[in-house]
Length: 477
Image 1 (cartoon, rainbow, N blue to C red):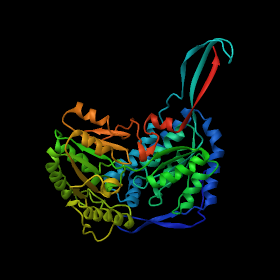
Image 2 (cartoon, helix red, strand yellow):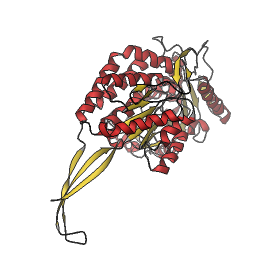
Image 3 (spheres, rainbow, N blue to C red):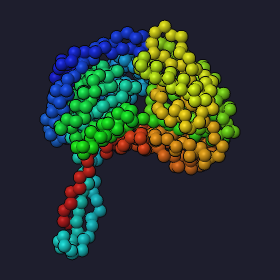
Image 4 (tube, rainbow, N blue to C red):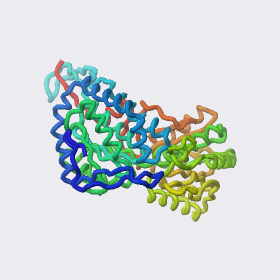
């Protein structure tokens, strides 16, 4: 493990990391003890003072060098990420390692951390004599940040936490997902080579709940940044609440794709179809709950079924593969159980629904469930796999109501040939983000959820805000 600038052997030995495509062992990951996690938090605390006082330009230079190192090792890093996650080659190179390097480079851009506030003229009163008061708002680092990352992207997700936290002058303890922590250790090597001082970045891993609990509850930790399920997020939030620790929570999603009767069906199918292919549906932003107006419902279901049936499922190392495996056998079984539940609830399986004929690996066929209702479990719970359910509706108001009838609110989508109509609907959706005729994202736009989908916003400058506190300095003019 990487603790206090040194590589430390784990108290709990190592556990195997499994390739989801081959079921073979990729390598061994360290199993930290509680004491080792607390030592990592203490190392981050000791390093915080000096690092927070380092000039922003010096911190930025470290991040820029890290970006160069990661980009220079794109090939082998992507091979490791692919072996840990089962991602296709293009995804591993572009969306995992490539985006990870880009995020370090993004936060190597120094931004103002203070701004003047308009002077205020005060009347004489109990607080003192009349006069002009000047003020300055200053962004200060929060302190030590525990970053708990998700398994679906072991490069972009950790980089999206580490880079803005370091840019603001924080120090970090990273607890990667137990399924694929090896890439995060490569990231730590890159940061070490880039010149990050000892203790500024620490990485500890393990499968036990104790590891995560220690990284959250340590008295040296000031903030927890978590990406994962809503259920785990609730437990972390409760622990943070006891000590008033800051939180950034990017949790589950059940994105609604509202397809109106004037939509371009081909565009909608292409966007919704990314649920089948992108990370094999293991992504919180996926448009997994499709709400189709009656006028386009039959055509949309028919074309989505054709789309799903054409996607090649198999070895992610083959160039022609579109859909790779899910992360584990347990998760494959979980996704399949949801499909069976959908059948029992009355949904019609019009594509997929059967395990692909692959000799090895944890594969799930792209599956389309039609004739769903919004009260079905498949429509209300996050499946996190290549499964899409389609729900018909009649009037626009009904579609909006169905979209909002969920405990989640991360990203929704609207397809319509009338842009003004699409924006009108988008503004009424209770979600942190809405895509209009696209599933693409602007990487400077704020990212985060309403309701049970999270707390706070990151990405772009919003991430710098998330990893900072605002301090007001006031003086007589």
